[in-house]
Amino acid sequence: MSHQYEIAKLPWFKTYDLLINPYRDWGETHRPFPEKCRWVTHYAGGYDLMIAHLDQQAIYNPEKGDRIHKGRLYLEATKAFKETNPKAPIIVINHMTPFHDKYDSSYVIEQIKEMVGDNYVIVNSYQAAEQWGWGHPIIHGMDINEWWDLPKEPRVVVVLSAGGMEKAYRRVFLNAVLRILNEREVPFTWIGVDRKCKSFEDYRDYLGRSLVYFDPTWQSPRPRSKTEAMLSGCCVVTTPYHMWKSAEDKSNYITDGVDGFLTNRHEIQDPRIMDNPQKTAELLERLVLQDPDEAIKVGQAGKKLAQKLFNQQKFWDQWETALKAVGVL
Image: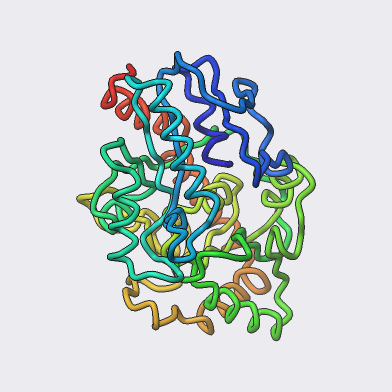
């Protein structure tokens, strides 16, 4: 949804039709419904292009018990679009990485590659493109004025779905850190689990008042909530994954201790080895309870970095390249 929210702001299109999904609505408590969008029940002709979405969970094979709805919806929707708009391109956004709770990555890559076919594929990080073996990275960008840097309150927050894709998210690390923080009575809120935001404004207000943001993920490409936290002036403590500056420069965009903190300096490739929860919990405790001034200083540096790297114009520039590549512009 947050991805669609930013895509709906692209300046080249007057309207977007969203195919009604019987399993999910828009969820306006997370993002307001874009003015340029409308709901439709089917496709007719006359579209410039289709933007379709999937991730590693989209494998649809009923013979093996894989009946997840997002896979079936993707297959049926792209087929219907091709039939009614045979000359219009399809851009597929592959939001995640080939780490599946049930299958080896090699099988996931094979199955998803078959599903996307010759369509133009966008991924969310340079590492994701390398892991899949294909895909054009578009790094997210936002309206930097949409995020609220408010007086900070002493707490750690995290934004992460509570279920699904355990192998990629590796919540075992988050839960281990949480246990230590609870023992040490460090204020911590898991947004969406401990606290349900009532609206987009409520989310921005709570995030903007939080001193420290913690990203515990392993194979989640460029979590948007981390950038939202940086733009809100939160001090970010993050694992080092999926943060390459470019395909050529494989160094992290965050400088440890300057504009954010890394839980470790090097990426751990083996999923059986967990990042250090004790060290991470001690860092979070220090920033919130002992050194809030340092957290505020680092948060402000991170905000400037995010405004430079993840602004709306950079996002539009990347999309302009993609739209030219498929012949729309």
